[in-house]
Image (cartoon, rainbow, N blue to C red; front, side, top):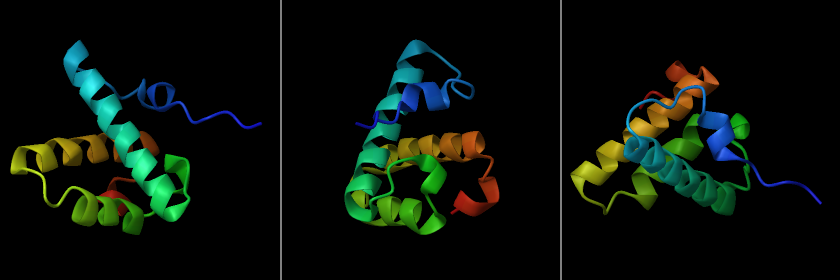
Length: 91
């Protein structure tokens, strides 16, 4: 039996700000992970490519408000910083 991926442990080194901000980033990162895992079967951020993140931003949250899209983009940038893939995920 495999363990599920712990997003909080993954992002701990790059999370900053208030408790509410950290919780929002964790919540949004878990949503991103779940959607990419469901559609692309990529369970961990280490396996993600630009197309996976671009698909999420273009198709899963496109109908959300501009503020929500902005906050998700901030979370994606945080994930990219953790993965050291800023040039790969830069959209």
